Image (cartoon, rainbow, N blue to C red; front, top):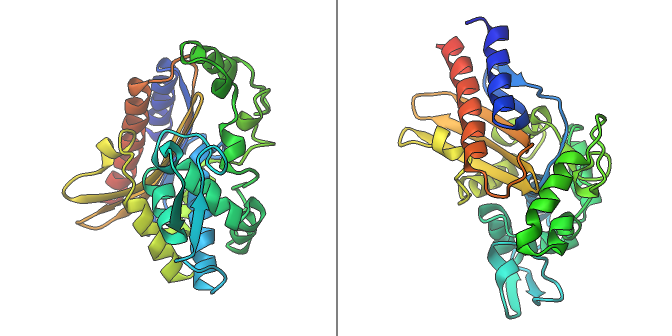
Length: 302
């Protein structure tokens, strides 16, 4: 099948499943790539935790931040809501910066990430991206702002109303009446922009190699593996990634490294037209599309 027809079929499958997405798969060694709307911007939700971790670890390397520094967090005062980690704690906890990094990346802990943003604010994270020449990712907000959506103010039985608002209140220019979904007000990026970040982390040119290695290790420790991992992880392949989820947005970026050679950056950012919180079919479709893009690129390499 010709590439144009191949990509058209994948776009049709996404549309049939209620999804629109920005996808890009890149061979990290040759630079060859294939994608679907790779420059389409989305609010990136928890994907911001990857540049955040990169900035924090670079500050540690430069001696600006002690990784053993203890941070005291008190539920109801310092802790932002979230489904995992410290966000679920009921009692005050003192935890080291280095351990906050693990929680932020491995279980996408919003409270840990908010504490890291308090030490390295969005403007500093954005500054590091600029130093690295990564201009396609914007970092505007912390996790506290990100979680204050209409869904947070509704009873669980009414959460579908927030999903409906997320689906219907956007504009053609990627603006949105929900500020967390508006690419001009929220932290945002495209599949290409995040593939560029993965390229720098796995094949660093400007970023310190030690910092890049530490971030790769944190991404390898990610325990949220229901989205793309089923299509990429195996006994013969290592999958390292980070997810991002907000209202009708479901994202994941990662790198698959094959034992037999070859490493591919994979970025999949999607929005759903289905007003449901739990959508395993959408996540399976994301993975299937990303896998077929990788397979197409890998076949061309063989």
